[in-house]
Structure formats: structure tokens, C-alpha cells
Image 1 (cartoon, helix red, strand yellow):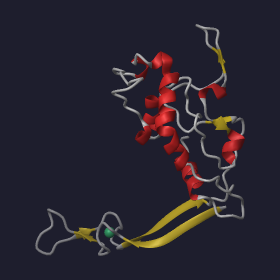
Image 2 (cartoon, rainbow, N blue to C red; image 1 turned 45 degrees about the horizontal axis):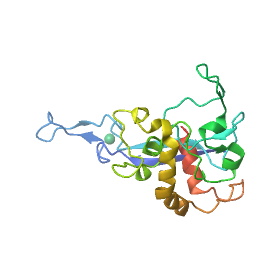
Image 3 (cartoon, rainbow, N blue to C red; image 1 turned 180 degrees about the horizontal axis):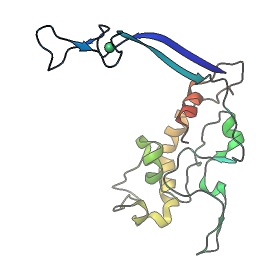
Image 4 (spheres, rainbow, N blue to C red; image 1 turned 120 degrees about the vertical axis):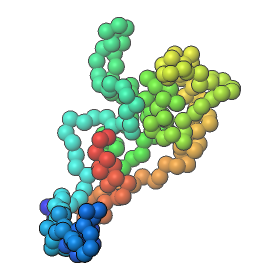
Length: 197
Ligand SMILES: [Zn+2]
């Protein structure tokens, strides 16, 4: 449903006086305020679509928390003949996401990114920077240049051991699905506003 907010606002350029006194106006001289044309106020109008519920998009199967800069799709890799599907990039089924389910541990893009790469964008507080122990973050310039990148499943094992518990503790209980009648959940509304997901 279309909604409209409309109110009479005091002009903030001239403080409601309708007059402007600048560097060139002296001794009691003023010019008419350019913003409000001397009226001292203007009508503020904003029209918007009222939020009732999360709308469904057609042709979506899988949803990802973020994209760290990788082309996501389905097909066959020319060089290796390896088949790849949406699920290979992690994420969760769209139907599940619509119910308000949070991304479970393991839904990161583990096959193609290392923990540092993924969490740099997903949640910086969980980005590892391992300088001791095994394995270590020894990339120079890019994550794929790290000597451990080819065996990044070991990095994910270490990440699970060190950050897995924190992630589990932070996960909220399953949110109620917003319907026409219930109040929309703040978290979901935020996601909708972010749009770019
Ligand atoms: Zn004004």
C-alpha cells in the first residue's frame, strides 16, 4: 500500500526567516532565501510502499550470506571437467531462508574460499590471522596466493575449532515468519532494505 508523509518544515537554510545574509550583505542588507524563496518553510513530501511482508522472488533456489567476489552459478569447469552446482558455493535453500532460518555453520563458501577470505567480508571479528600454530595465514597480496590455500579444508577445521562455538552462541532462535498480520521482524526488514544481497 502506497503511503505518503507530508509535513511543513521550517527552512533550515535561513532558520525560517526567509532571508539570507552572507559575506556580501552588510549593514542590515539581506537577500531572499534561495531555498524557500523567502517563505521560511517548505513542504516535505515522501511517498513509499508500506512494508507488510517479505516478497518472494521467482527463480531463486539458493541464498548466500555474502559474496566475497566469486561468480556463483552452475555448470562444468572447462579446465577440469568438474561439475559445479549452487550448493557447492555454500549458502542455504531459498525456501529455508524465507522461514527466517539463520545461515548454519558450514554454509560459508568453503570449497572456494578460506576462512580469512570469507570472514573478511562476512564478519570481520571472525577473520583469522594465524601467525602461529597450524595452518598459518601466510598469504601475500591475495588469499589464493597463500601456501595453504590448496589445502584450505585444514584452515576451516582450525576455524571450526576456534570460532565455531562463538558462531553457534551468536545464532538467534528461529525468527517468526512475518505475515500480513504480524509485525515484521526488524532483522528481516533490515535485510530487505539492504537489497543488494
Ligand atoms: Zn529559507
